Figure 1 (cartoon, helix red, strand yellow):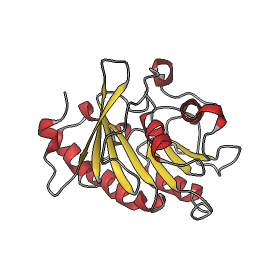
Figure 2: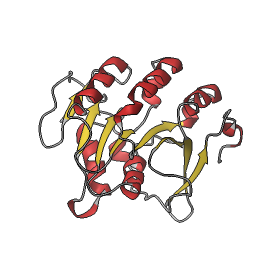
Figure 3: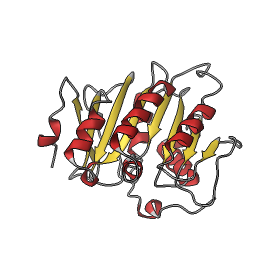
Figure 4: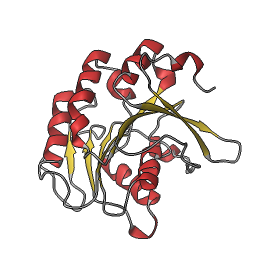
Length: 226
């Protein structure tokens, strides 16, 4: 389709282990790892465990192209069981905002930091209203490129604005490379979510997950998993 980052060429096919207790749908979760969260398709893996076959996923991609995002989704769901998918592609070069078309609807925006068009893209993809069956999930594969060019308070405001994109029975997953941000930024993001899902490489070749719900003032980053 178009050029994007080369992260897909480095994607390590590590699988998610057992989902931790407390992680569930009907919530907004910050997915925090020490690398680009798109690399392992963590969000798609988690949604595949939490969701049902008749669900829908709207994904925002900031580090991989729409083609690579579709590939990541399809590799997560065996036997062609991938749920309906819509993509807002902020990573591909030489694209502009376009009406959704094709088997997988895709809306292109010029850059990850163009939050106005990102919101417009999600609005277009969800314009038909809630799915007739199943839940709608929202996946922001990596927020880190957005935070590189947009003030944290503006990003938090947009997260609040798009929170209604998912349905009540869906889940919103927002990926972030926590090593790229200071604790103030991470704490500000945590105020907009129900919990933090920490992702780390386990000794058995799988991804270890630890879920920490956010209760009141968030101070978990002082003791985040190493």
